[in-house]
Length: 318
Image (cartoon, rainbow, N blue to C red):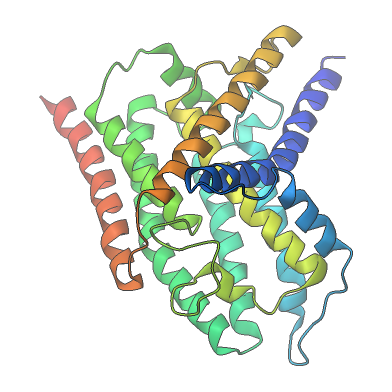
């Protein structure tokens, strides 16, 4: 009988991340508009946009292959699975054994791979530019992310997210400079992976600057809705990873009482709101950098991750 409540909690987490992803994007846009003394769109505008796109017909280019048609579904499935595996309000859920940080990085990497292929499939110049820039960013962001994983794995002794969250929430590790470096590097990688300012501006379609938007210009209708929802889920994934690893307080156990699960959901809402507010403040207070400076930005994240790992080795050898 215990399997039924476990399935309900796991299904609730999968549905929760799917419903909250557009709301998080709408919240960030609203806060940015308020900081710039504008009214801004309503919080539910991303839901309206998705519903409007789902009702439209998908127009395909004549030379589009089967990959162009299948890619939105693969991208959405990979991103949703990654978002569902990250512990949000509870740890030790039914599928937590598969919630390995390296596996989540692989899922997000596969989604990026199919998106880059889809951008080049039709053969437009914008798609090729966006795909090449996306791969250039990934070539530095993924090694930086792996160095962050190695740092956390050396501290915790595992790459399983539920184990990491439980260990870091206990406070046994104390204050470590290496964890601070890993946090800064993870934030920089999250900004680059989600095409946020200063790496990219998600609110523009200027061909000289856009990365993500250039790859999806040929999509429309339900295909574009799935890609937009995948991008919103990806932002939620990285904020959830940051909250799970570095703000793990309030997360309940999978077999906890319903009251603890409700407290965990409330804490998760508060973490999303705080991180979304900080993201909006950061984006309104900094200018976008040139594309050629993005490798320097991500190179700094890679060096922080490498220094964090080396610092752990040095401190343990003393």
